[in-house]
Length: 500
Image (cartoon, rainbow, N blue to C red; front, side, top):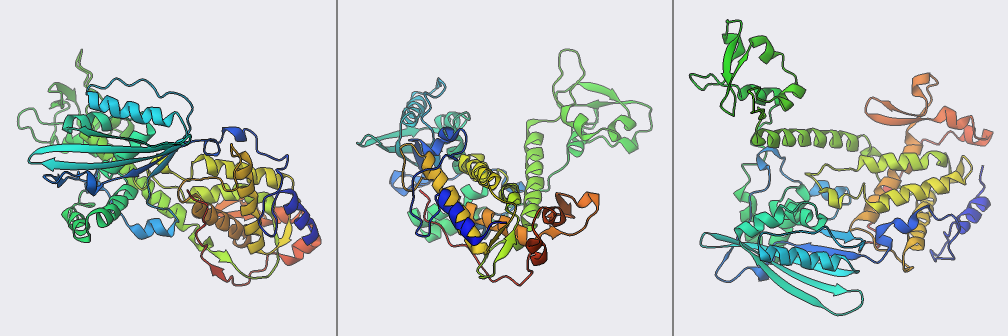
C-alpha cells in the first residue's frame, strides 16, 4: 500500500511536480520512443476546403453530392463535440524519405503530387487551400500550396485541374494527404460534411451554408441497404421476361437464369434459396472463359454502406456502455484505487471512443494514432513499478497520470521541447479516456466469486472487473474501504491547451 508520502516521492521520480515544471528525464523512457513520429521534426499539413478566394469571379462554387448519402445518417455536430473531437483537418507526416514514384497522366496532376511529396520529405508547416467550381458546364479545381519550411522561408504555388485531372488526382489513394483531401471533397465522412458546412459559413455566408444543407436534406438515409443474399437474388433474371427470378414460382426440378454477364446458368429453387452470404459475395458465372462475378460494383458499394451502418451501431452501443463514466470526480474523498488494472482499462476506454471511417477518416483517428499507443505504453511502464493500490483522490490521480504522460511525450521529442505538438483534439480525447478508466475502477467492481466473473468480463454490454481478485492482493485497509460508493460530484473535463 502506498502512503501519501510514498506517492509524492513516486510522482517526483516520474517527473510530476506540484507546479507542473519539468525536471530531468528518468530512465523509464518507453522502448522505441524515438520511433514515435510526431516527436521528431515533422511536416504538418492543414487542409482548407472550400476557399472562396480560389473561386474565379466568373465561376460558381461547385460541391459534389456527399458520398453514399442515401445510406448514411445525417451528421450530427453535437455527437462530435460531445466526444471532444475537433472538426479541423490536419495531418502530421514523418519525413521518412521519398514517397513512391507517381506517373501522372496529366502534367498538372503530376506537378501537384510531386510538389507536396517533396514538402513532406522535410519538416515544416503547409496549408493546402482548395476550391472546386463550375464555369458554364466545365468543372475545375484550384489548389494553392503555402508552406513554411522549418529552416525558414516561404514557398507558395498554385495548381488548376480540369474534371479529368480531379478524377485522376483523387484516385491516387496510396498517399495519406490525398486520401484526406478526397474525404473532404466527397464529404465521405461525418467529419468532412460538418467541416465543409463550417467552412461555407465562414468563407462564404450563412445563406450559402444553409442552402447547401437544404439541397440534400431529403436524401439522407433515404435507401435501406440489402443483404448480399438479397442482392444476389436480384441479379438472377428470367431469360424470357427479364424479371427477377422467384424460386417459389418454379416447379421444374431445374431451370435457366440469366446473370449480369449475359450467360444462362442452370440452377434449382433449392440452390437459390439456400445460398449463403459468403457464396453470394463470391459467386461467379460458370461459363467457360467467363467467371465474372454475379454481384456488381454497385452491389459492393451498398454492402460497404451496410457494413458501415453495422459498425456505427456497434460503436454507439460500445460508447453508451461507457458514457455513464464520463466527467471528473471533484470530491476530496481519498479512495483505494487498484492502479495495476488502469493501463488495460485505459486501453479499453480508448476503444470505446473509436469511430468508424464514415464518422472520422482513418488518417484522423485519435484512437489509433501514435500518441495514443504511446500513452498506453507509458501507463503500462508506470503501473509495472507501482504497488497494487493507491490511497488517493480521483482528481489527484487524474492530474498526476496526465502529467506522467505529458512528461514522457516531452522526453521523446527531438529536439526536446517544453510542450510536444499533438494531433488536433488529442488531449481532449486523452482526458475523456483517462477519466473513464479511473471512474471504471470506482463503479465497475464485481463481487461475484464465480469463475465466469473473473478478471475483466461483461455483464450484458457493460465491462466489469473482479474486485475480489484485487482485494486478495491488498491489505486489510483496502478491503475495509471497499471503494466508497458516495455520489460523485462530476464536472466535464475542460479543454486542454496542448493541441497544435
